[in-house]
Length: 322
Image (tube, rainbow, N blue to C red; front, side, top):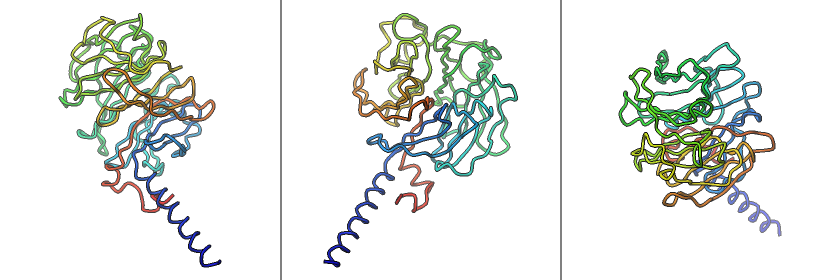
């Protein structure tokens, strides 16, 4: 009968709306596609149904950082050689930092310290900068021994616990084939964190840090895995101390940890996928893998906490019912 059909239709609408709300209420995984020239996101629970957040045709995005409390994402670009700022929904795109007019020079990695309200970035000429998020702030540089040389630094992470003298870690995939670190405010005193080219580290492409658990994680383009080393083992070249966390990838690039450091996420340029795994005592159990689209070449990856963005009121009510 018509009343029965109307009731079923209303239930279907309500069920669809509730499902949409449930999807919107979960944490999100964001990433940039270099060749796809876009920012995308998926729900953290399943990794299904990727959404297009921002079309960046002509920019070639390479790096990404999220500031959930301020409802903002920052994107480094290769072709336009700037750092863009945009809303987490992709709106309000502006140029936050001009990097260079030289075609060979751009921001290859970003790291955001939300507590200190500072954005760090590494450039293709191995220079490392940071700048406050407030309007009118000026960039300052960490002076390292390779600053100004194209030495292959393409990853960056920061231990922010000792701000303003935070410790910066970077991967060198072309020169010394190592991960190095240096405290902010020191001058050209690079300290070797881990150097190895036998089985665990050769071409580090992405870095992530667990300051509570005391681990530094990296993705390796050459050995095709994700690995980690204890922060307390800094300066070693002992291969046995490194732990392979996620093996069997093609060309892993960006990596990220959730707030509890119980899950690790990555992009794989070779398979055009992103993935999530649960960390268990030095190894990991894969949770899901999601396609980013043929030829997209996913690079940097970052996580969005629903609780933080809900408190900050980053999204309109309508967004929850999409």
